[in-house]
Length: 536
Image (cartoon, rainbow, N blue to C red; front, top):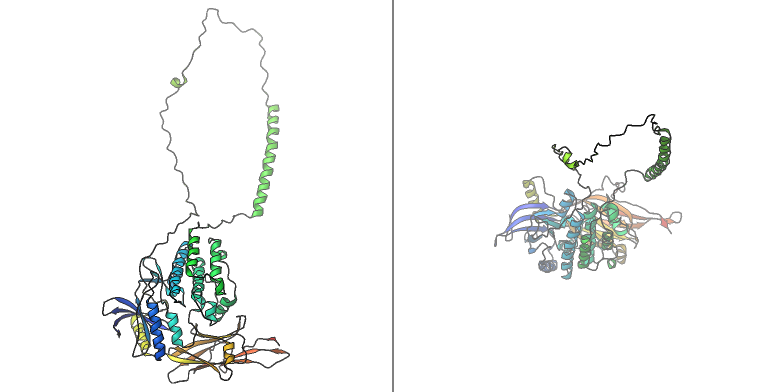
């Protein structure tokens, strides 16, 4: 298979919005990685904008950023593709799933990624989709950002003005559809730092919509509550990264990197060992020991007096006859004895000393020196899920290359201007807009377009309140086909007043599909009305 001057060698992975191939540049013989995106650049104006932004991203040259070598558009399918350097290694997502990350390593990786983002932001480039799947770890242990600019290209292709991304790592401004800058990337990096240091994400839920609601409203648990070995300074770093207001976050990645390096230089906190005996029991034992020592002090003198009284020596016997005297001429000799000379010789050797056995300390301070990497990027696609066999994967890739993206029209009409409507396709955020912008187009329904692959998709529509809490949600299956209207109709309605109360409902009609049978709302007529009672 040939794509321009590149010979496709094998398919690396297939994602929801892109396909990754390993290829060879036929001009210079270099092995590269090619990522093909969805088609949709048939408009000459969009083509020109895509190529202009690709030239900007191609100027990025940083040891922690995967290099973009080339960019092009397949003339057959109209699908754009990016040619990047090929890196052998694994993604950070795979590393987190396989093993635990030590805090010192997390600080070092975070500082390196923050400096890479700072460099890109100085060039006017926002990544837009910072997540573990887009971070590579090469064979030397160096972390590198990949897919730089892919989120921007995907946003242009979708033609709806909103950024795509993985919901668990989106910033509040991305969810609300507001303009973003480099501080949005730092919010996503803060989520990754929390996950590396504690082993879990700060925002977790079974529902994509609930995760988005947590990002907009929930208060996170400090990292030190999850992992007591972390320093308090790390709590402050994460809290500043995850501030909902961009003005309260770090101004740039250099400041964040400096803060992480300062924490990395601090000694690691060892966890305090909890006493094995309850405190009340230890207090009781202490009092009992003191009382025992007092009784012993009183008993010893009494016992000594008793023994002195009952164990007296008998009086010396009285002589009845005088003792005989020695002769006067008997000389008296004073003999002296050399103790050292007369002592018996010590011939038996002393027994050898017993070896002293000691157990190694349990809580030994471990030093982890971050290995300074010096390599290039990884070969695995962050979002890719390879099929079970190479023939199946090749067949899927060929089918995906032949299939052009299908535009899906999103039509919204609203009787309320409070809140935000968000659309998710296959658990990925593809569109969001405030209802205020919908109300401005009161003369006709608000319309937007996003491009998806043909076939069946799991769609979800969420309605958020003005305070960013989830008000209503509708899920369903949609079948997108060439030649069909492919219209997703969304209505936000007000119910009639009952007993001075009113409710807001959500009605959805799916494109050429049926409602999700597992959804409890709206399985009968492809629409849902989830009402919330609120005061007049």
